[in-house]
Image (cartoon, rainbow, N blue to C red; front, side, top):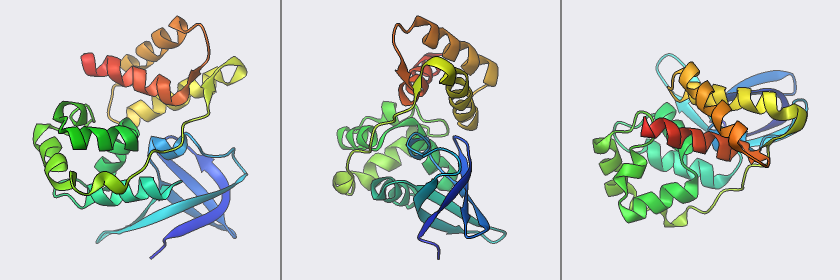
Length: 202
């Protein structure tokens, strides 16, 4: 089992990265919470890795912090929640928000995650309420929408939302509206979350 990888960041997107470890490229799926804090391309990166074995494939899921990985493992231990859906949870809610929602029994908040309905939200609350205390807050994102980077951040936000299952044009329109309404730079994390709020309102 691969538990961790350190290497050159050869490629990154909101849903996956390729880490070059001594000439071998490892494709690793990631949540947005990890993407926010990744270094630049060609810089060194370290990920804590969960190896998921399937009959037809071996998939790697990577996280910058032990907290993210622990949350992922807890989520995938619930019946009906696979690795991709667990990533969707961590891409929509921070670990702090996830823990708060579970402890408060806030199924409406959990149900804002694409792919999570009321039944799944109920299972998450029921099965994890006594297990999430050890999870701690994750580091904040550092990327902002400002200057020459705005186009790239827009693209990253759009890609992230499409990967979560939203329609590209709808997400693009909301992203544009939100960024145009800002009088100061906005964090990539906040841009995505504000867009998610708008999308959830329908």
